[in-house]
Image (cartoon, rainbow, N blue to C red; front, side):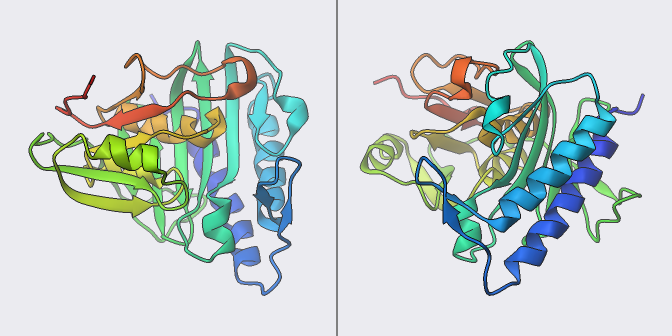
Length: 264
C-alpha cells in the first residue's frame, strides 16, 4: 500500500528546494539574525510558507511544528508533522551547498516517515510505504518519482570506523569523544545529510554533542531507522524520542550496524 506521506512530502520538499535555490543564486539572500542570534534568510521563510501551506492542505487534522513559527512550538500532540524548511542555514549563507529541506511525521514519539532533500547537492532521501529508506535519482520531477535505490546501513568494522560530523558545530568535546574510537576516515558534512550518509552506508557513525532541536533531526532519523540504523541518546543509549517539551534533543549518536559504543 502506498505511503500516504511519500508523495506530498516529496513534492513539497522539491517545491521548497526550488524556492531555496532561487534565493541561493541571488547576491542578496536576505540574511538576518533571529532572537537567539542564529541566522535566518529569505530562503528559510519562503520554504516555510510553501511547506506549511502544503502540509496543512494535505493533512488538515494533523498539527504542524515548524522551526520558523514559534507559535507552533507548544502543540503538545502525540501525532504531528515536524518541519525544518532549511537545515544548515550557515552552510547556505556561506554557499557550501550542504543544506536540506526536512519534513517528518512523528507518532507516539517515533519518526515514522520523512524526507530529506539537499537541492544544491541533488540528493533526495525518503521513507516509502513498504517501510524502506530510499534515495531517488534525479532529475526530480515533482509529479512523478524517478528510480530509487533502497538504502541499508553497512556493517561497521570497529577497528576502522568511518565517522561523519558537523562542518559548522565541531567542538573539543566532540573531538575528544571521537578520539575514543578507532577511526579509519572522518568526513565533514552539513545539516541532516549526516543522517543520510549513515543510512546510505557511506558512514558508520555520526555523534552529535551539541544543541539540536527535533525539527533538525526527525526526518533524517526516520530515514536512518528505515535503513536499519539507530539514533540513541549519548548518555543512556536509549532511542531518541520526539514530542519532548520544548522540542530540544539531548546529545545523540547515530549508528549503523555493529558500532560498539564506548561507555567510558
